[in-house]
Image 1: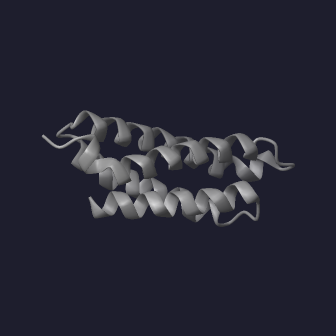
Image 2: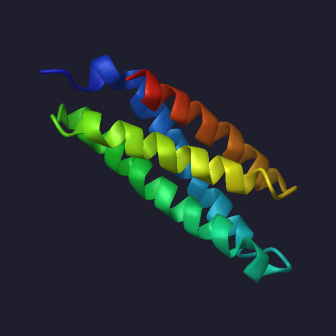
Length: 108
């Protein structure tokens, strides 16, 4: 059974991405035009949820982990694409974290 040690790099990328996505979503709520950030906030929250779930399944050695990797990568890519439309520090950080996580998930 594979678990934490085999998936460590991907788990860490997922946990980092989830934390940065949460930070981005929270920061977006403080922007002047929150309505303009609505899609970003939504994708941040979805991405964070999937990243946490993916990390948990991998650390448990779940047979479902392989099915979630691709969904997680897709969520990360969508989130990065949306965040790249905004010129804020938190969105720029989120793009980097999401792209790194997507790469790790796709390599699994």
